[in-house]
Length: 128
Image (cartoon, rainbow, N blue to C red; front, side):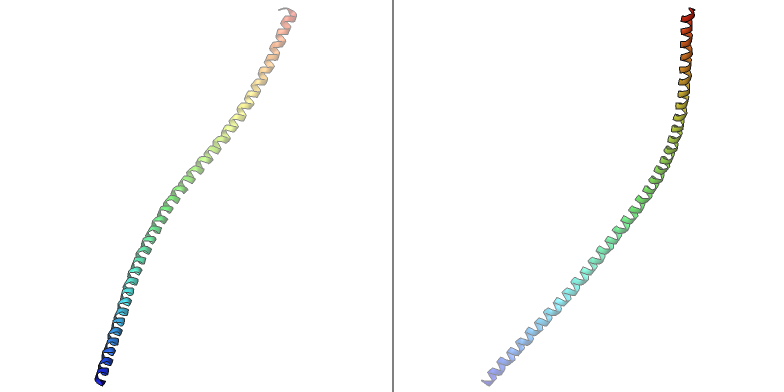
């Protein structure tokens, strides 16, 4: 019987060694899979980061271009505004001058009307 017990002990020890080897093997496999997965995740992250950076560079380029166009438009609009403001001042001066001429002509016309009406009254008075 003693030999039987030793055999059982030996079989049991071998089983523990095999189970232990399987656990170690599984652990190593899990670690390798995790390492591979982490490397792949890092690679994908670098690709995403690179694409994001390229997109940002493209946006910066587009915004710089838009900014230049807006600056040109602002310059043109400002020049147009200054010209219109100048034209407006000229037109106001012309209006003031024409208004003054009109008032002068109106006064002359009113004076002439008074003279004419005085002449008509004199004609009626003298009977001419």
